[in-house]
Length: 265
Image 1 (cartoon, rainbow, N blue to C red):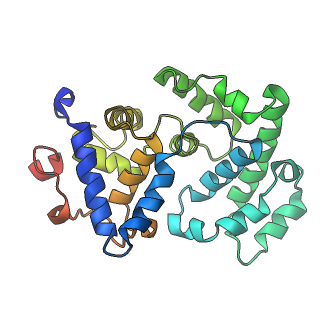
Image 2: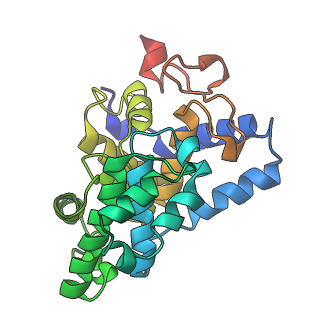
């Protein structure tokens, strides 16, 4: 690993961001790209209704292990079946089969049942803490990394499909100061020399916080830029072919050997 005390987080992120926007501008207007990115810059941890929290959990469940574009194209159908956690908490076996039989739906029985279980978990939290937001806020999650990890552990124990990576996905989406350590971001951080191997999830999370601290951007913005940089495609930003892929396109990446250990080796 490199000397992290000398790593230029802000400069490196700026180079990644500028390259991403330049590549996206081959397909979309700069105005459209900036409009898409702006929504992520504004995501902070703030009050959300129980319904909003449930919607995010449903989407995290379905995005888990599936190609992002597949789930995105089905968002309205998925949320149509799981629109009201109070109703979903009372779904029966008949409802499971009804959803499974919808030809437009992603018919993954485990995910469908998980969404029902999670509606029941929301119900239990509301009964105990009055709201999901009060439950989460009770951990003071942005006060310390320790508090974040305590919340993470509790979320994993309560909700189906919020596992060791997907739980971070949910936490990132609600604006907590943590990014999700998925394979794309772990790959990029390994190549930058920020972690020793791609299985170091906590180290990846902590390095993500370093980018947030040095740039001042919301963690959700840091996350989306890095994911788009290393994902196969990210059409919302005009990216038809990612940059830091399994087989990276180093010829268009501005990071040189002093910033990217992949090039140095």
